[in-house]
Length: 183
Picture 1 (tube, rainbow, N blue to C red):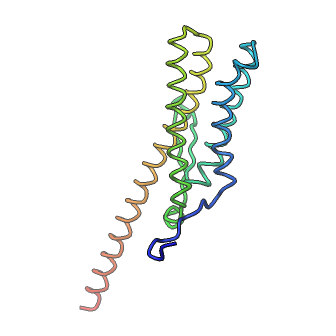
Picture 2 (cartoon, rainbow, N blue to C red; picture 1 turned 45 degrees about the vertical axis):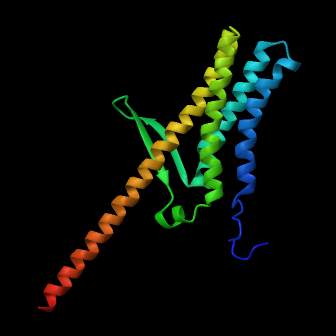
Picture 3 (cartoon, rainbow, N blue to C red; picture 1 turned 180 degrees about the horizontal axis):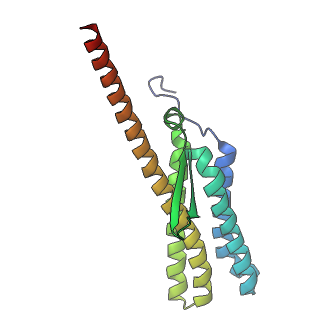
């Protein structure tokens, strides 16, 4: 091994990474392979959507928080409007997020949606509207997580920028105050 190369970073949360990928792969694999084993569309629909829903919940509430330090949810306010809520780790903790975990999270999040899109196109080509319904539900859940986590990441960056500018402004004003108090 070359001594000049830095040691490779391992996954900080291998179990979380495994289950993060497992639920996505399980939904996709079941959908793709189910035609070989089942003739019932209802079984294929129910199991595939159940696996996709489990994936959605695990990503939204567990994996996102552990792997990238982000969490989102949506509430309806008193006026009946949809309000997005975001939660992220503090600045120090976000800086310590494992790069490999983060890379796996974001790439798998986007590639899963791409896979569902390809399966949807394949269903269109084969004129299988019922299977297009399954793909539509799974793609909707996948896109909901993409939109939620992308908005959450942008909000976290905005919070970090605001914190940095407030810190600089407060340091500057305290320096000015101390300089004028000496005079």
